[in-house]
Image (cartoon, rainbow, N blue to C red):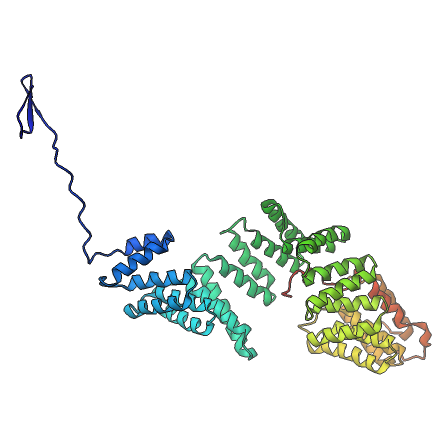
Length: 488
């Protein structure tokens, strides 16, 4: 074997072999000063390596040809660190360099939203909507959210209604163009507030396609099913929540308890409610339903204390006031019932049942004139707002009985006829039928509904008799299903 220095070949036993090159690998060329390093900045930002981002931005700001993206990322970092004012300044610098960038407008709008400057954020997102070349579900979501907030603080009812309608349309466009969970939840909330429960259920069922095991969505669907009295479907959804989490949230337990309560499983409902009371005792609807459970057990003192706690936690909770007044009447505390009903009527002046119960209280307090006014108001409310009033023949039956007792026989006949028209195709409790039959015999009403005025002893019938019909808990409009959450 022979090797000559400087040669790239070697002679080995007469064979020439080429030697590998020993040249040192050249170093990588340095990045030129005008190179775009936005990609590197983006990598650092997505890794949340903010210190490296800042160093890179400070180094590049002086020599970068187009620092738009540098200011943009600098603004995002400032916002992540809680410095919203500095974030806004950097994002505005980015807009000054490129006023057509929709993403920058969106980030400015988000920053203003976090700062609580909702009116300015709304204007920015409207500009972003005009600039966007495509349907952007994030822009639609924020526009819907900001309009929803504006409607909540709007003093003019008509303007607020228009803002809510516009907000709903933006949320609808958001779920059509994207898959943002918050848009589905907010749209369902708007439908629920407008009492379009089936529409809200449809929206949340669609949302389940995105997150099939979302316990919050499943719980909300179960609550909405309770609103439309679909207790079995509500129960099935809650069972899915239990299978996913093994433990329900308070809202789910409250719905579970309401289902058991509607099925007359009072002890089972109370066991669910006790679990909530141990974790989150300051829920008004919880104590409302607990009070109704004890009312079902005829334990009036505990029922009253529970409902009074519900009213204390939420003084403007109409259901709690209404149910408390019923229990006061059942326990013959008519003065307390009067004050509670007055508060309930102030919240809902178009509720005929409240005026009927008020008439019963005043009758027991021997204020016949005001009792008659209350019964008359109850009848007028039903006639004036037929769309807002559910069919409740008990109102006209109590009115007719009171008119008969006070000697207004012609008016009693008229109200009895209205009772008959309201009671058509309805399954009435036995107590209602008994009182109606007794009143008919006293007035001698023919099959054509014409009343013959007679002199009858007032001792033949008493208000206490049809008050007993109210005390039967099966016949009471307790609205257990309607009290699962605040939005009724």
